[in-house]
Length: 386
Image 1 (spheres, rainbow, N blue to C red):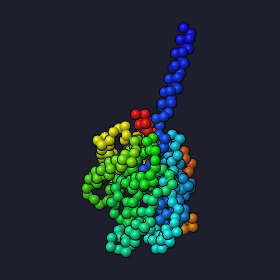
Image 2: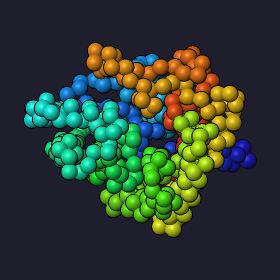
Image 3: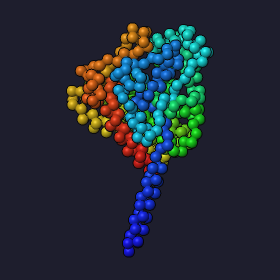
Image 4: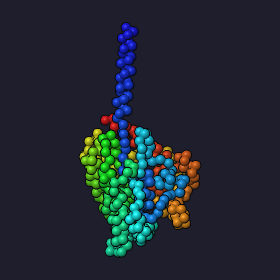
């Protein structure tokens, strides 16, 4: 009888060990991220350094993290996700300039790029103007080269990136070449192998909502709907390349960010955010198997999370930075530094302690990203266990 009990105990223990092994096998072995500033670890600054004669443009540190290259005071939600699985996540847009690049940049084109970035009126240049033609040349000869194969990282997210690639204006034309379809094109060009156990994360759409809200277009809801075929096509392109697990994350209610909260644009921004999430969720359900493409709406949890902060700081930005056009010319010329200043009674200590939900006018603080990452980790774990 005792022998039988011992045998049963051994078998039970063996089954637990085997079950544990199987469970541990159902986790991502690598991660690839596409998106915008909510996930950008510094790609935008690598790109700006590449297409200008600057060496290390950065934001003030502290409070900005990642050596002044990210819109956050600590880690981003996707970094916490990667960290949970012990996976490396690093910027994919790192380049060494060739002599030809430097010779071209040292001409007038760096001045043109700087003018277009710092002067809002430059956006209104007509297509027939020489400046517009020069910027078009800049895009063709330099920015397009960014899509060449590299040995860089696996995070393709770029601040200010969009889903659509047809926004007008000189600055927007530059970012059209960094949109989701271009990010995926770069990834497939980089020709990464063995992606069966890779978790692909797509988190983008907020900048499209902002662009559409601020546009003079009357058919704003139709413009949101026009984003859906691009999203579907982008996901399908990843699947054609071999992707088996794609996690698509919705946008928060952009109307709740400090830049729109309590302004005349808050209502329409909230409405378009809701429409975007509803339509994208429907398209993913319609076109894709849940075992391969998982939809994760975050708007509801984002709104609920904000309620944890007191009303007097809930929608306040801790810092002013380039998002709200803070610019100190002297610091920029002497140190290539984009100034970041504390606002609304915020300090480095209060920011680090999670007393402010928002880092700046658009981006969440580390407290928000940590909360969001818990949702991402739960969903990713359930996704891989299917």
